[in-house]
Each structure stands twice: as C-alpha cells, then as structure tokens.
Length: 241
Image (cartoon, rainbow, N blue to C red; front, side, top):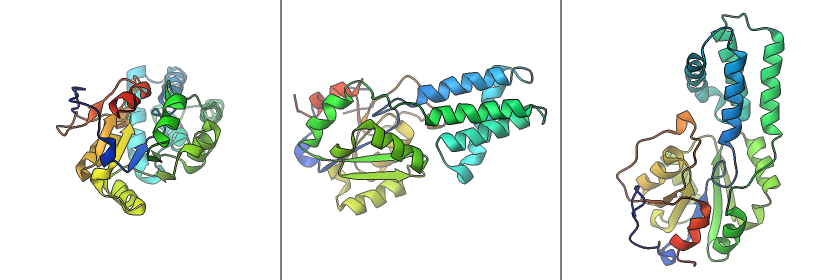
C-alpha cells in the first residue's frame, strides 16, 4: 500500500478487528457547504476587501479561534462575524452580521447527503467487522447528522472529538481494547484521518474529496497507506468482492 495509490493487494481483513470511519466528507457531503458560504462571505465583504484578502483574513481568524471555539459550523460562524468586523474596520452594518448568522444557521439545516457508495458499502463491511465513527466538530451538529443519516445501526461506537490528534486515537484504541495494528481508519483528510493513525502503527485508507478545507492540508506521508477514488472501491481493497 502507498500514498500514491499503488497497491500490492487487498488489506488482510483477518488482521483487522475494528474499522473507523470519518464522517464529514467521508460518509456525507460537508465541505461544499462551507465553500458556498465562503463565496457568499467574499461577496458580502466586497466593499472592503478583494476576495483573496477576504479568504486570507478568514483563515487567520479561524486559526486564531480554534483553541477557543474548536471546529464546526458554530465556530465557523463566529469567525465569519469576527472577520467581517476586522476586515471592515468596524464598518460592517448590522444587517450584514444578521446575514452571516443566517448563513451559519442555513448550514446547520442542510439535509444530510450521503456520498456515493456509502449505503451499499457500510452494510457489507459491518457484516464482517466492528465499525466505529471518529469525527470532530460541534457535538449537537454531528449528532444531528449521524441520526439523520440513517447509518447509526452499522456502528458499534461513536467518537466525537474536538481534535483528531495521535493522543485522541490512542485513547480510542484503549476504549476499544485493541492493538494499533488491528485498527483501520478510513477518511478524506490526510491531516486528521491518516497521519495520526499511521503514527500509532494503525492501517489507513484515504478517500480524497475535491474540496479540502485549508486547515486540513498536509504533506503526503512517507508511511504506507492506501488511496482509493471513492467509497465504492472499499469492498475490493478489503477483499470483499
């Protein structure tokens, strides 16, 4: 297995006890809603800054706020408001602040759109292995999406964390009472889903998505892992076809 997608053969499922799945942009659509709101934010800020400067400012404000607000729509909405005030030097009108609140609320009301292959693949994998969800973000929003997805019956355990670091995955392995080499993580983010578990000696499958949040960018790791094009490819690399 390698990060380039060059694969010597399917993963040996007999060595795996638990398979973890990321949620946002692995099981269902998520990033595209943030992209749409960011575009709307650039339009709202047009009287004060060009789009490139708006995106750069928003990134810096989000980065600054993460230790305090964490991840998710509510944290993002607060950062939008702060960036609007900062970028306009306090001139942004109350109506525009209200518009940003509406955009954030609209994201929380989006229907859960499952990605291709999810409804067909999860039952097959759940029939042979224990599955867990490992996701980060706002607790209420993640719980809402998990419930609305209809996927909860397939999962043995749900882990909603504020950050996906090596220590978080280490605690998860302790909770599940399994060795690192018996855990396989599937996700779209190299930074959050792949690199931390590889550091522990776990297995990983990367399913890239076209929209990648700027804060999730990471260099391609040297460690062995598998890249597949979509969830629909999972049964093949797991030897289930």
